[in-house]
Length: 456
Ligand SMILES: *[C@@H]1O[C@H](CO)[C@@H](O)[C@H](O)[C@H]1NC(C)=O
Ligand SMILES: *[C@@H]1O[C@H](CO)[C@@H](O)[C@H](O)[C@H]1NC(C)=O
Ligand SMILES: *[C@@H]1O[C@H](CO)[C@@H](O)[C@H](O)[C@H]1NC(C)=O
Ligand SMILES: *[C@@H]1O[C@H](CO)[C@@H](O)[C@H](O)[C@H]1NC(C)=O
Ligand SMILES: *[C@@H]1O[C@H](CO)[C@@H](O)[C@H](O)[C@H]1NC(C)=O
Ligand SMILES: *[C@@H]1O[C@H](CO)[C@@H](O)[C@H](O)[C@H]1NC(C)=O
Ligand SMILES: *[C@@H]1O[C@H](CO)[C@@H](O)[C@H](O)[C@H]1NC(C)=O
Ligand SMILES: *[C@@H]1O[C@H](CO)[C@@H](O)[C@H](O)[C@H]1NC(C)=O
Ligand SMILES: *[C@@H]1O[C@H](CO)[C@@H](O)[C@H](O)[C@H]1NC(C)=O
Ligand SMILES: *[C@@H]1O[C@H](CO)[C@@H](O)[C@H](O)[C@H]1NC(C)=O
Image 1 (cartoon, helix red, strand yellow):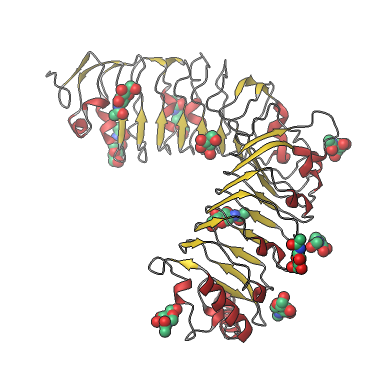
Image 2 (image 1 turned 60 degrees about the vertical axis):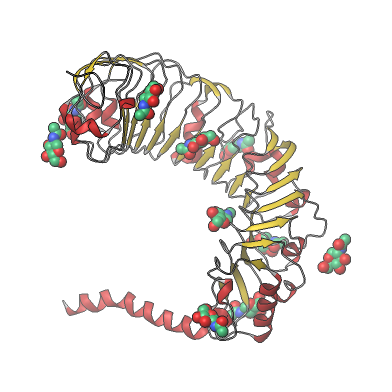
């Protein structure tokens, strides 16, 4: 017994020793680093009333303990995390020089304006630069990059324009490149990224880019064996890149493109069967190539707004988010469908031309928070789903459902949105549902009682 206890305490002891150790270390603030930081701060414009870190940078505290500052063991500043500091205006170059040991810099979610602060890219040790969610703008012309160790570059959600800056293609060790949500334009050959052997994540989504895929094998893009995340939403893609050899790819977003035909069945084997996230929504896919087996670990499957026809694909059992809405299946929901949705939180097949009844098995999808079967041609009664204790949104509107609203539904204690409008329902609305408005029940000739004006 006593042996067990001391074994349990061991990690705790270790933890407290190491935090003691780090505490001592953090007092090692080098004078030149401190003055560089203070000069950097004086150069920045920020709203002191909204700042939580910069505002507290002052002489009475050791600089390695300042908010957002990370020092290494000999007191050099190696990291600055100044997200959400309400910094506005530009970043001037003069005082960054003193911070030339900097490895990580995050200025995300500020109000930076002007062009890309070029001096950041001459810091010799810099590995991570994150300028996401600012108001930086203009074309990026950077011919003097010396930060060849750069691994992670995030320029997303700014107003940059022009072509994808050529300097990024000169960064041999780039691992994460996030350029989404800008106004970059022009044609981009996906193969140009094929030389980044270390590339882990690429996000070019939501620009004005046209991304071209090399149809001929071998494509150099398929040599990116480390790739984990590929996001090319809204890139005018006409073809799915060849991803067969990307054995570590877990997350694919090719939504809002011009992809058509069948979804090839090899896609489900990407990542050696470990694919977790697939978003092919807002394309023109007509179906899924058979035979197909969804990867077991897939937990987000978004195929909404395509032209999918025929049988509704049976999802893998772990799926959390399943969006099949705005398609043209024209079939009925398989009898056992609810039994595979036991861990699903979000399920929508709205506007899919579905016919037939809602299967009773749906009550086994008891983790659901959103169930949207609206805008189909579903018939029969509303199923007894009073057991879905987390259900917040239930939309069954614009169908041909008949019978009464089951009293059991009032058991849905989390329900905050209900819509059964435009069906063929009849009878008295359960009293507990009087908290919803008329708009939840309109267009059912046989329904009566409050909140409707028609009395029973
Ligand atoms: C220095 O910053 C600390 C918080 O980091 C604050 O409590 C203190 O009042 C500041 N001192 C001065 C002189 O501004
Ligand atoms: C801290 O960083 C500086 C500059 O990169 C380096 O010279 C020094 O060796 C580092 N110290 C430790 C303990 O890693
Ligand atoms: C950049 O910072 C933002 C804000 O914290 C974060 O959401 C984003 O993931 C970061 N980018 C990278 C590539 O780590
Ligand atoms: C490039 O940077 C070096 C050192 O920072 C500087 O001396 C040189 O003038 C710069 N060249 C251009 C074209 O800006
Ligand atoms: C790129 O990474 C490799 C391996 O980590 C390293 O040896 C090399 O020095 C890096 N290149 C640059 C320019 O930083
Ligand atoms: C994909 O990998 C296989 C075997 O690992 C290899 O034979 C093939 O050439 C690779 N394809 C491409 C396009 O690189
Ligand atoms: C899939 O992409 C669409 C369009 O880009 C987006 O609106 C949707 O939220 C994405 N789905 C998921 C589950 O992230
Ligand atoms: C619901 O799940 C249980 C097992 O948990 C099963 O016995 C039952 O048949 C399922 N209900 C329907 C209607 O499929
Ligand atoms: C209604 O909810 C109660 C308590 O959560 C539960 O015991 C009961 O079985 C539920 N009734 C139905 C019909 O689901
Ligand atoms: C329910 O759906 C109908 C038809 O789309 C719509 O007119 C009505 O406003 C919706 N009700 C609510 C509460 O959103």
